[in-house]
Image (cartoon, rainbow, N blue to C red; front, side, top):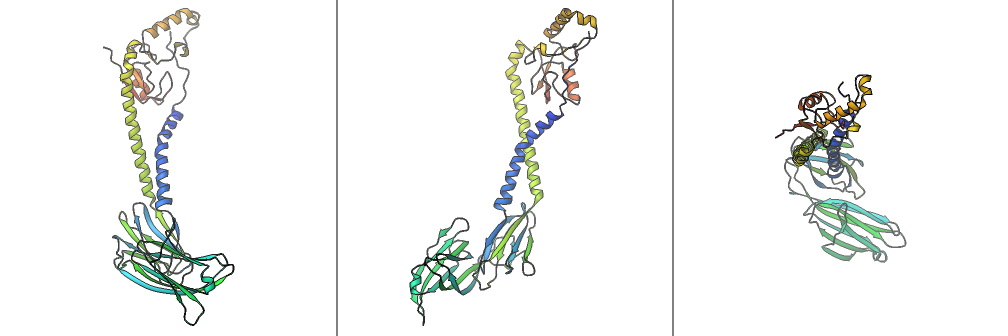
Length: 388
């Protein structure tokens, strides 16, 4: 009688690739979330509105940021300075602006400033007495969530030699932030007002800057950060005597090699965790299933009728009763389904089938397919069984 041949020979390549991609799915998802959060959240591109004589401090890690780039859309000269330590607010810049404004009916106009802690701003608005009552002035604080800033001092005065009434207000700045001066016209027609702004602005000390770039010659400049230090970047603007809109675009160019390293670390870490948990599960399942193996070691082998067998000659095929009885005897004797000579003394991990002897199991592991002869599942390990 010839030995049995297994008809089902599905290759293990697609199954192996599926298991590999399943393991990589979690670290890839984590890496994408971390990269998107850093690139478009904390270190995302920012289009900001600033004013004259600004000194804005930003902190950037050179591990994630390769360089800082600023684009001056209005070409009013912006400078970037890099420091290894946080500079102090030790300088003070005083500047003033006076402009005539025409505000349409039921409309508003505003101006943006970036002011640091310790700065002071005072302003005076002059308009016709009949218009001033319908004129509202609001000082807003914040870039995303606006907060109304209350003035420290307010007063009404009369202008000299003119039929105008002036409204004055003074604010003391206690926090580094963006401040927005908004003038609202609630009249039915347009009005003309005079705006006088005096600012005493706190500025950072730029004497110890490690690197510097400016948009004086072009509309953009790049400031490269030295790896792996943490840098303090100062964005400064000159006093150009204007209160109009002034926009710049600030970008943090990412260091790609850092994100690749993060991906590699996450993949290795998740792989080690899965491997450790798989080994623990295999050992625990062996301890739990041993009492059942003592009762019936063929569990969880598939029923005998699902195992296809072929025989060498027609005479043996005619003697179906004898063949069936002999195969049942071999099955009951718990012989190896590969060699039919040795006893079954091992099982496969993770499927748990006990169908071969240890030598045949090692030959399967040394082969290319490495699949269980019963369920065709990929084999990770072979565990030997020891009979008492």
